[in-house]
Length: 247
Image (cartoon, rainbow, N blue to C red; front, top):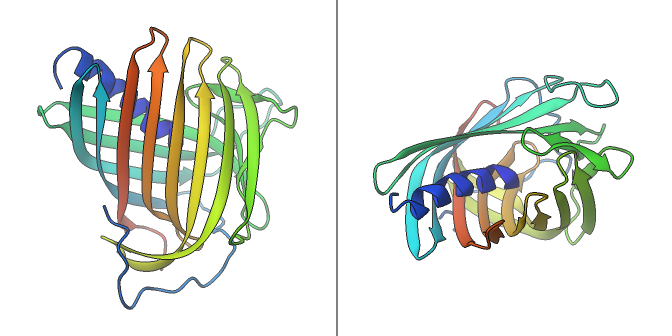
């Protein structure tokens, strides 16, 4: 999810440089957490979100609103360097800026799940497959989820981009979304992404996750510079509206 927001940011920065272009509150009668194990996702699973946000670059701010759709296709990735196909977590966003400019972003993560549901990240549609560590993957989300747990990861991808991250399960939190009120796990992820083409991004993402469904509310904040040294800040909020997953 994190890089999907970054790709949208890049589009909006280009728009801004040309001179163009909440949730989280507690609620009564929240649906309780029924398992600490992450759902084993199936082809066709999806969650649709309302997306709002803004990007500021070179003194110009563009705000956006629209929709995002998280979807799963098991075993549908391209073949990796070891000759294996993996599952795809796709994120398609269709938003419109405050200047009325429509923007579409389409991003795919390549992943597998362990028997207990842990997410193992193998690569993505932009930077390619993970080449280090040698195993070819990192664990981006551990299952079962344990409040207070924390872990770090580091990897390099085929195009030379490198990522260092840390995930912390802060604890349980009740969140009210367009989909309803839920007891969730609040999970904080921080990443530093260094791009082979120059520039870097620092990402802070807060996910409100229902283990049996997925993330029902997300906030992603990014600061960074491109290869030319132009600074950019962005903030996006994803609020679940509907899902194919029973709850």
